[in-house]
View 1 (spheres, rainbow, N blue to C red):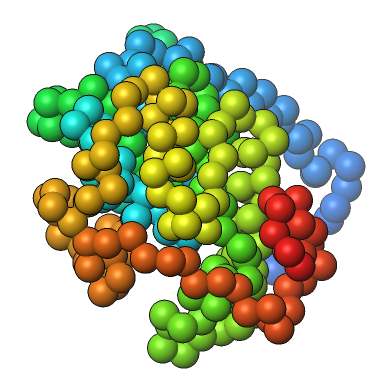
View 2: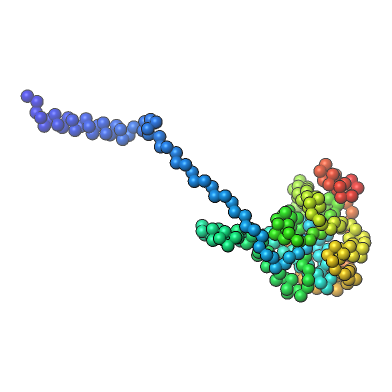
Length: 292
């Protein structure tokens, strides 16, 4: 007769073996084993805050490429008794951070968002600089503003714009001569990027358009027309900018060359007629009235 204890031991060993096999075997992919996907929560609609009141209702922005004479235009304007044109302010690099998860909702309840908070900060900077100067009109001539002109237009619906053009070939030559190890392809791409945005602004905004060549060749006529656009009387002191204090000329804040430090308006260097432009740059130069 079989010992019942041995039978129980055998059953226990067989059960343990089955459990061990199941533990080390990969799971069977049956339909019942596949979890039902959970629906993802719907993405929150992005919120765009309305434009808040501005301390400076109608600032003036000079839109230009780099190496287009914007620093000369700045000091001429800054020599006017009612115009404050400081060094490049780089407003687009002043950013606001909403550092907590609930901050955006808190701002939304105040009808604000990150972008509008940045606009308020930019506006406050301009207002402070204008108040310190005791003048009426403020001008920002940062060339990179050209790349964000639609945002400036949203921030200040009543802003005024001066579009300052220069022959693209002359801009390329100036950039090439100023850089220790110039990358020609990168320079061409940079000049084209600015040129495209300038053409957008020229076509889209009610801007006053001038060229660097006419500013240096006919400074009185050009600045008279500018003052008419700004609604200000012309002042002859604008042409004698070397007698005024315009702050320090140094890198990242504008031109710092011996030409601008001379205090005198000097003739513009013309574009090299042998220099080749890309088809698009040539097209834009022609649209701006330059010989190609």
